[in-house]
Amino acid sequence: MPIYDYKGDCGHRFEKLVASWRTPNPACPACGSATQRIPSRIARIGGAVAPDSYDSAPTSWEGLGGGNKDAITHWRRKVEERRSFEERHPEHLTRREAIASHEGVFEGRALTYRELAERSAPSGNTSVGMAEASKARTQPPSPTPDA
Image 1 (cartoon, helix red, strand yellow):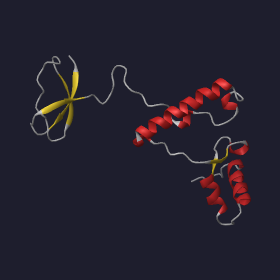
Image 2 (tube, helix red, strand yellow):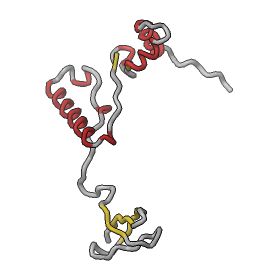
Image 3 (cartoon, one colour):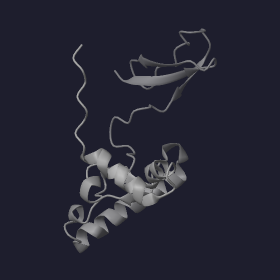
Image 4 (cartoon, one colour):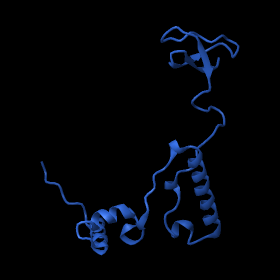
């Protein structure tokens, strides 16, 4: 017995286990109106899968096998698939920040230009902002007083 998705005239969506695909559509449980069968929200066999997000791509030279040609080609294709997907489906757009530095102390958490600008704003000097960001990443977290 298959499960089908239905939508009533009122807009209410529901699933119903029916005897076969030939079974007439049931009445809407919310308002009693006529219903129509709609495509399932979850693909049970096969179906479309969104390409991997940008977050899954390597962010360093070492992550690309030291510049391995096949690895670079593979990830370039993956990123292009994602870009094309986001152009067709803007609701899945991934917000990306420009990276100012991702090596050394910034390897675990990259320094974005937004963070650099925020840290540099009070002094007006990017070198001071970079030093503050570096210091924030190398200092151990301050201990919290025991309650």
